[in-house]
Image 1 (spheres, rainbow, N blue to C red):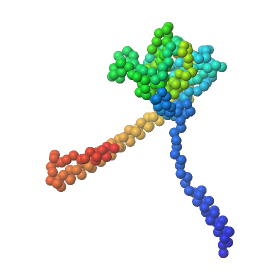
Image 2: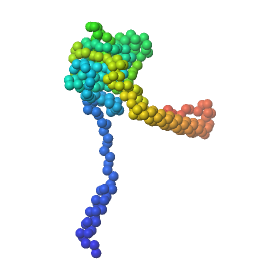
Image 3: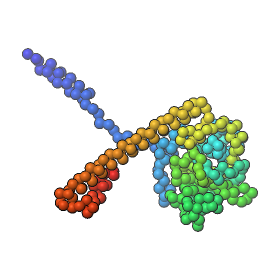
Image 4: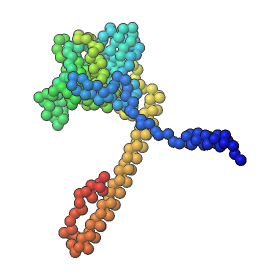
Length: 304
């Protein structure tokens, strides 16, 4: 006869085993937001957080060692490496990732910050209007500052010889463009970075834009990765680009295959619905030419 103590121990062991075997409910995975790139409300406008994928590969601002001889407070722009530095004391600098437009590539040398604006207005240049009237003609008269303004939350205007050079360092409404070469514009930063730089830089601060020779000496050779971002030209990055290009091609092939399967399935469903529709009309003595079309709700269900 089993003792009460043994029965109690057995029940306790079973309860422990059951608890261990029971699957744990998975906690919902919250998106990870990089510090400094959270959503923020500014001057009545709500700026969304920068998604983590746009900050991968060293795209987030960071304080780094800096070997240049520029004075603290200087902005150094490297359009080839797609980096901007704000020089600090003690051979240090804040490094920002940038996107470089056609106008940004055209400027070399130095100037000074002659103007700073929060939520600046924007007007396309004569070159933009001439080359892409389909995109810019409707904005020829200018566009007020706001979330849909290409200059973003902040703009710093580069002057040379006391005159506006038309070179701008500004925010952007296209986070995915950062790190890339773009078809238009000057120097873009994430809005959060533009706001950070805006508070650091003083009026009259010197801005230096590196030449290719200066970029190679300071940064080394750069290349574009599989996603069009500037990365150091190293054997590791060359190999990674090749692997990424294969992965992108495979993903595209899967997408095309899935779309083809979905289209084939939709065609079969449509053919089935048509046969059903015509059969119903025949039973009602209605000629095929006079048979009412299938309801839109049915067609919508097939196309989804």
